[in-house]
Image (cartoon, rainbow, N blue to C red):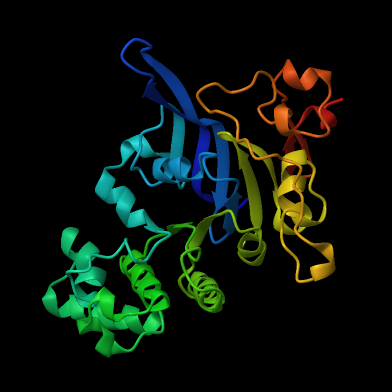
Length: 319
């Protein structure tokens, strides 16, 4: 029996108008370009790519914070246009990258965690305190932290508070946007293991957005690779890391540092220039940086090639 999708993007695009100056007018910037992505209930989907590829814009669309220019977002098979923002917020919550800026420093931890309950008018003051204590215990913080302020906590503790705030209304889906990149390396694994434990205990579904491939490999059941607004490869995590098909995915994997000093700093062969999203290249958007490009790459956008649930958008596989 096919498993139900908790969250789905169907051919979603998002275009912004960028002002070029007084005499030049504006030009379109395609941040997300025809993206389709399915996240099954109870699973973790990783979304990876360089900064500026459209990951966070796609996350904002899925959260209902940004309207797509075209395409649909589905929650449990129902289109997002049928839901209010409040209803979406009860089903899907974010965990942001930086716990130092995502928490209100003038509020106590108790006030921060209970805010969603108060906004949505769920329960009363007594039940709020009870649920805050329950969430603190769930994320591994002592109850005395409830009266503390964010400035009195470490980075790892702050992120645990952010996780507690995201989960206090028991959402179905959590979008984790670089949830450990601002933390010390020694704390990152603790937060990732906590997220895994909470997923299993509460039956959560995650979209894990990161440029850290080690994090995605550790967490994700399935991985989508994004480049210049498009998903160029998608497969089960074990398959993608063992047998990447797209040249861009191979370059990303080759860029991972290893503990062996004899190997030196890896060369991705991607160069230092990221393509201009306001003036994207013709054909395959990756072809100017691709060492495996052929003539057709600069002329025609490749169609997705699907084989055994492994998709790669590359002319090399459609020959």
